[in-house]
Amino acid sequence: MMSTVAAKDMVKVARNICDKTGNRLTETRQHVLEVLFELDTPVSAYELTEHYNLLIDSPIKTMSIYRILDFLESIRLVHRLRSINKYIVCHHSVGACHHKTPFFLVCKSCHCIKDLEIATEFVTAFLQQVEEAGFLSVGSQMELSSLCKNCQQSLEPNSPGDIHD
Amino acid sequence: MMSTVAAKDMVKVARNICDKTGNRLTETRQHVLEVLFELDTPVSAYELTEHYNLLIDSPIKTMSIYRILDFLESIRLVHRLRSINKYIVCHHSVGACHHKTPFFLVCKSCHCIKDLEIATEFVTAFLQQVEEAGFLSVGSQMELSSLCKNCQQSLEPNSPGDIHD
DNA sequence: AGTGTTATGTTATATTGTATCATTAGTCGT
DNA sequence: ACGACTAATGATACAATATAACATAACACT
Ligand SMILES: [Zn+2]
Ligand SMILES: [Zn+2]
Ligand SMILES: [Zn+2]
Ligand SMILES: [Zn+2]
Image (tube, rainbow over all chains, first blue to last red):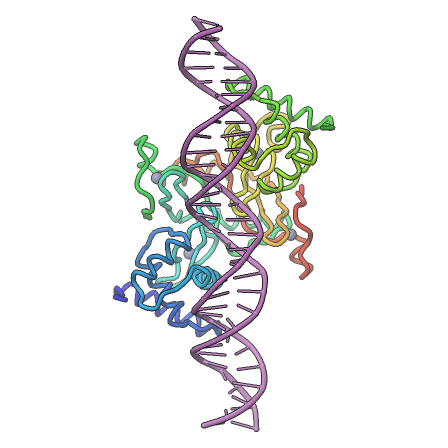
């Protein structure tokens, strides 16, 4: 497939992470990452399968997509948005990975998301409360069901999928 | 079905809420609420259907359970835990409803949950950041994927379903 | 009773996610 | 290079979760 410069950077980062962690960035995994990156919008595993098969020569089935998404999530290159059952690439890792506990605002109506850059002391204080409650955060993210600006104003919901900054 | 005193209190609260909001607490809805209350553990819609049909005379199908869960969630008597696709009664409403934005810690392993009583100023600060980002929280809850104390210690995960305080 | 509205029953189907086993592709020691 | 081991993928089936669509029943209001 045609890869943008940004996608190539993403892959480079991915390769570094895999090298360091003793994992293999296979061609299929790389392709999944690239397709997901180019889409740049939350997609379901089945949607991703369709896009993959449009863009990549050798066809893939959703079972494999799920496996690869699991893998990519395990090395923190992909976020699974459980509130909408969709997946996105992690944008925290493109430059240098500064992963904490990301807070995603997920629009209930159009499924656009915003990655809330939350103050460090806030996260720290929160995680301390989690710890005091006897729980251990497992590096996942938080999601808040909400309404984006557009969907608040218009009764008409927006077309799904945008990612706001 | 046999209802505990606590369940009857719950129903009384439910009836009040429905009266105030112009909704109807039908017999079926009341039964769903009672069953869910007695279970007192996160259950899926299908699990709830099974329990309902064991406890209540006239049988119900999952479609209706989903509809009633939607209703009960809309009047904030039930929480839908999206990270594990399960449902629980809201324990915030039993005395007097002091609903803000509940933070649920959800154990990835055994699916027990803890409702984290989070400091008010913390919630306020957080919601302000959400607002500044142009999003409107729609009264849902936050969920953090985590590991409970038991599941941290033992490699063996615990049996699913407990609710910790 | 007649009429509009809300809730439920019923059936079918869509969507999301796993289990299982066979096959292929790397890895490593000889 | 060869065999043996492990990791990754292919392929099929199936489970679990959720919604669509339409018919019927219960309720509310005149
Ligand atoms: Zn990230
Ligand atoms: Zn929106
Ligand atoms: Zn609650
Ligand atoms: Zn646990």
